[in-house]
Figure 1 (cartoon, helix red, strand yellow):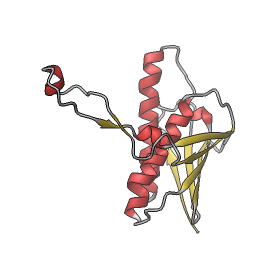
Figure 2: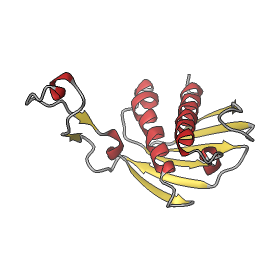
Figure 3: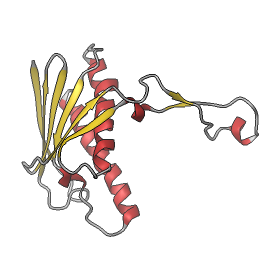
Length: 165
């Protein structure tokens, strides 16, 4: 078992009214506990495991490529990584659709970057506890919120990654 901790100042343009993001990760042999505290608060918990639709799924759908635009028969395929995860709400609002997507992105960061850098190839479950206020809508402009949510997610993922460097 080992832990990592970090405290990050939040940019006011992304997180108005927020002072800091404290991240704590505790690694066990089969599970990683992650806490994302927004001004010291936690209110939601998700369990993320790699028991999704198909852990080796390749969805057969065309992507915009020159061959697709020219109506050629060979189709390019993309891999749907988000379907590799099962996200279970343990505590909090189960109707919030943003947070499970955010948790899958955190799980993907751990599986592709953090655990692979540590030569740990085992599939570990994640128990993610966070403050839903991190992604609270501050404006009524929905398009602005989507861009803002993406920027917030990138900031949080970068803070988690930097915690391990």
